[in-house]
Length: 64
Image (cartoon, rainbow, N blue to C red; front, side):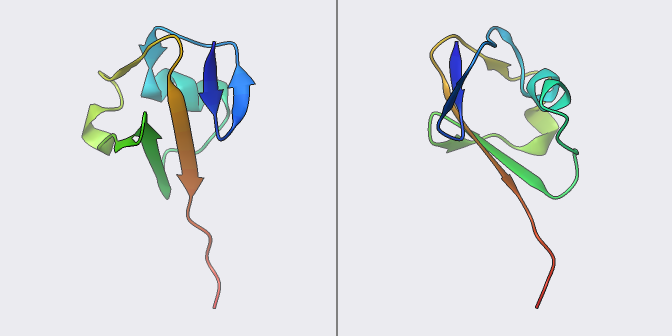
């Protein structure tokens, strides 16, 4: 179990890229932090989200 944007989610021991795909989040205009550390996009396919992790997924919004 992990926490994504404050909500418990049944997911662990897979990559950030896997998590985003599971959540149906686009891979553009998105920033991800795991346990308060930003994960560079270049690491999403290798960075494993472990059980108990706190993940923040932030999506950019256009406007003015």
